[in-house]
Length: 378
Image 1: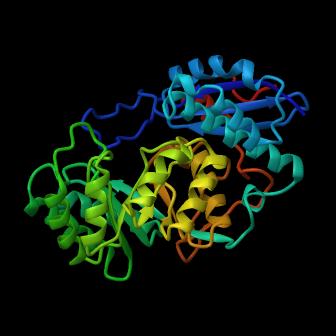
Image 2: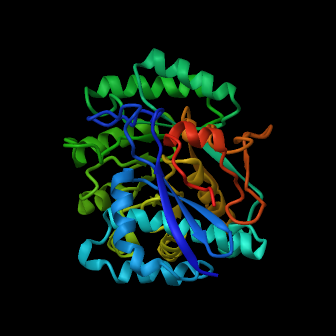
């Protein structure tokens, strides 16, 4: 089997707000679908957390390297793409684009072998996993109402983040967290994401430590991105002294970038994004490293239905990965998959068991959100 062609299509028209200081608009493109077409008719799907113009340009650069390659060997082919493009910059748009290609190749490998990707990654430790509803912070009353709506859908774990948090004063931060805990009740899991990778994040170590102490009062399970994503020494100090676990890593790419953070003991929980780091091939290696350093692996999932499917398979293959992120209110997750995603009575998501990633993209929804791009057609 050989790769005949790789196409991409950006998702637009319903891009959800990201909480960024330069806020996203519905027609902005930050997620791009990738389709790998083979000479035997199999088509695999992937996703890259990058604007489609950048992915298209990256694919043009990569084309001489991937054309005619065997998609049944995703790790070898992806590493070939990484190794031969280092001079273009490790970890930027090229790496994001390779993430989408790698995901699509794993999808093809699963289809060709009749196996779900989770089994190909090493095994099935679980058949379902708990999703945590991920939503932006807001004024306390609005946040409370939003959480009650999401809770009514069956979610039992919640992460709130970005928005006004850490951007006004300590009293406002406490009021939002208190409102969230009141809304979801004492029996449900609550996580807080400061969004320290936002542009010109101004809070440092002392703010993060004081805030972590406040979060402990509300039984918060982890404190995510409390510091600038380059503040390695401060992350390590915070992890040592914080009463709540410290999470991060969503902006890092390639396994080599994660190693210094593990060595510095900077994370309790590491959160690589499969649509950024280099795909499943790279994320699996990062997760293996996390195991060796005693760090919990919970994938970052503020992306698409393809990213969610990949995260579910990763949760299948790693015994300690008992949560996946579920971006609420995004049509790029809820609408573009045939049949959608449904929580069971326990608030859990079933891990797909069909071959490959185990999802089918909805043709009408794709047409709507890609402007009619020819992505999957022969």
